[in-house]
Picture 1 (spheres, helix red, strand yellow):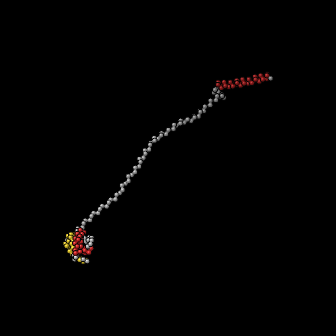
Picture 2: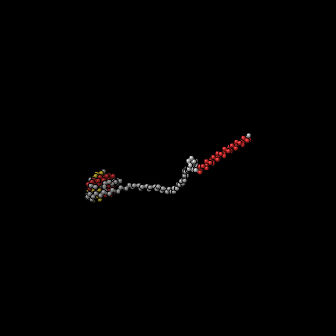
Picture 3: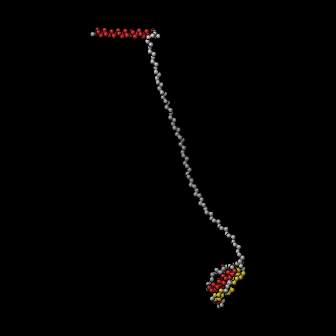
Length: 200
């Protein structure tokens, strides 16, 4: 058995040596005659495929920091001033009307005028007046009751009073004398008649 194994190993070793010798002869022949036909040409080394260029790594663009806008303090608006109230329109007082020119006084009458005789219970009463330029300047009773002492006494204080009042008033609008009603009524009636004659 061991002998058989030894024989087998020897045979295998011989075969390997033969194969190696043939391969060495073929290699030597190829080197000696490189241009001979049928010579084995050593395979050209495979062209190395250039490595695919890797895309450039993009350089990160720095993000600019926003410049803070300057903050301006808002100027406070001036307080609205109240408008001064407009002065009230004053109504102008109407100008006083110019006095109308005085009409020229008509030329008044001048002279003496005697009124009518007026009968009373105690006697007649008659007045005479004096007028100057239309103005009464004098008056007197030319007739008055004087039959008895009582009538004379009444006429003594009533007639002078009536004369003064007539001149002061310039008309017949005078008061009667107390206690001499009849004489006063007669006097005023005659006086008004005399004034009418003078146009006063």
